[in-house]
Length: 264
Image 1: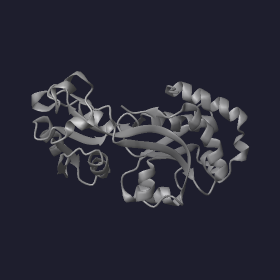
Image 2 (image 1 turned 120 degrees about the vertical axis):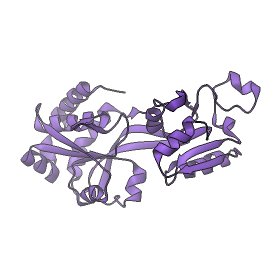
Image 3 (image 1 turned 90 degrees about the vertical axis):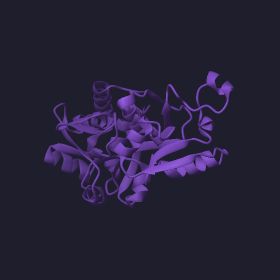
Image 4 (image 1 turned 90 degrees about the horizontal axis):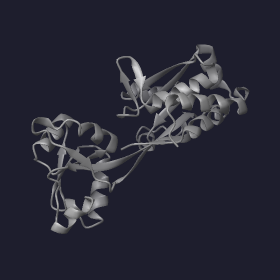
């Protein structure tokens, strides 16, 4: 179930009429004392972004819903984008009230002891993007069917060095007997330019990021599409500080009522 921002807030307020805020502890006390809910998320197109000084996307809608549920209709919230080590240190200390984070980053930054997962908020995926007009085909018969990963055999696939998509490419494609030529980049703009001029037949990465990149076809005005066959899931989970289980119990039904939105 997908709900727009206003409906998410309305659902949150209705839920809170049943789940009493009195059951929550230190975090709720802090939120009410400060008069503002502090949320954080990793930047992701269509899900979490800051435009000017205004938080946008699904993470902002969910943060607003929790804020209005516990602070009233004019409840304030702030959404921080997690990027620097200091940002993750704040998560580790329990300074943030609701965090929207990928489980793989929880492991990478050693945050498992600091966070309690409450509900999945967004479901993205790792995907491969190919040119729509010159999509690689291995046989003539494939032209009549939706493009799949098997058709990339023998082709060059661009990816960012250090991106978690790389082990998925290695295991996912090689386990299916699909031999491809990897082409790693350290700069996203260089990868995008190489793809747009045909130096690689495909580009791999997070689906929401690829969906944003495909809007820029470069000097050749290249049109692209994401292959339906995905390499794996990349969910985002709403989490709260582990030192307040009651706060997690209060936030959980608010996030769960909205249901996870899905990426491209």
